[in-house]
Image (tube, rainbow, N blue to C red; front, side, top):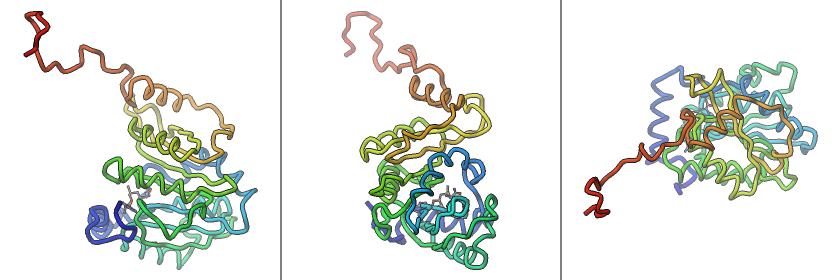
Length: 274
Ligand SMILES: C[S@@+](CC[C@H](N)C(=O)[O-])C[C@H]1O[C@@H](n2cnc3c(N)ncnc32)[C@H](O)[C@@H]1O
C-alpha cells in the first residue's frame, strides 16, 4: 500500500492535479449524480443515525473533488462536522476557500439546517490514518473507487471507508456511489463479507443500462443496513438479478459453450489435440 500522504509519485495525484488545474468545470463537477438524486436512497439508512448520534457527528467524503455531496448530506441531516478529502492539494485549497467564505452556499436541499463545521484535507483514500477507526457516522465515496486502478487500490479504499465508519454503537454507514458494474458488485460483496458488515445496493438513474439508459449504483455498507426497511425497486431487482445470472449489467444470458474460444481443432475426433 502507498503511504497515506499524497506524494509526487502517485499516478492519481499526477492525473487529477492536471485535471483540476486545466479544467475549471471539473472544480464544481458532480460525478455520477448530485445529492438530490441520491438522498432518497440514503435517507432510510442515514436518518436513524441522527437520533442515536452523539453530540458531535462526522461525515467524511473521500476523494470529494469539487462535489458538495458530503457537505450537503451533513447539512441536510444536521450532522455537526464534515471532512472533505482529496489527493490533490489544488482542489483541496479551492474547497477551503469555498467553505470558508460561505459554508452554506453549496447546499441545495436544506436551507434551514445549521451549517456543519467543515474541514478540507489532503488525503490518500487508500489509507487515512488521521481519521480514527469509527470516527465517522457516514463515509462517502462517489466516483473515487471508480477512479482507482486495479482491485488492490479499490479494495484498500473500500476497507478504509468501512474502518472509518466502524463505530462501536454500530450506526455508521458507508455510501459508495459508482458505475453500475458486475465487478463493483463483486468488490462490494467481498469487502462486506471480510469486514462483516451488511450491504445494500440500489440502481438509480433513468432506466435499465441494458437499454442504454444512464444508471449508477448507490451501495450502502454498515453493521445494521440489512435491518433497514426500504421500498422495492424494480430497476434494482432487474439489474442485480441479471448480474447474478449472467455476470453482466447488460447481457441477459451468460456466454454459452458455443461462445468459448477453442484453441485446438479436434476435427479428426481422436481426442488428441496435440
Ligand atoms: C471521478 S472524481 C469524483 C469526484 C467527486 N467525489 C464527485 O463525486 O464528483 C475522482 C476523485 O478522486 C480523487 N482521487 C483519485 N485518487 C485518489 C486517491 N488515491 N485518494 C484520494 N482521492 C483520490 C480525484 O482527485 C478526484 O477528485
